[in-house]
Length: 170
Image (cartoon, rainbow, N blue to C red; front, side, top):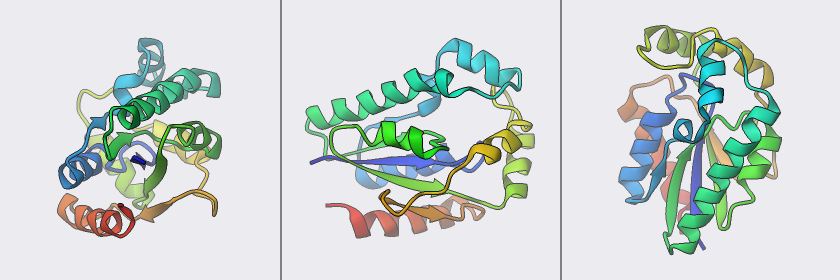
């Protein structure tokens, strides 16, 4: 049975960098969650308008379906980036064929703000940090996963992630 690793957290927490670490460590397919958004969603976020649950539903379903496709293709692992801020969103993702695990990257808020302020050419704006924090629901006891402080260097965070992966991968 495939294992899918969803790198989650608010904007600026390091999802893309962490996903590349997982992809390299497990030699697995990788889906950048941002690529699954509609242009309308990108335009909203670019204008600083938070997405609604209705905006996110097709995006989450597409990510879930991509993970199921990896299982059907016989891939033992996959990695996806997705903010997955609410348990209800993670419930959709957990509907994928295979086992779904969450790696919640959670640096201090000021680190997120600094990273977002330094970002160039991305549709997400630094102002989105607060709206994302407002809806963030921590992982629950019935959800497979880990919370990692991702304030360190990519190498430091990568070592923590790969050690955790090695403890859960089959």
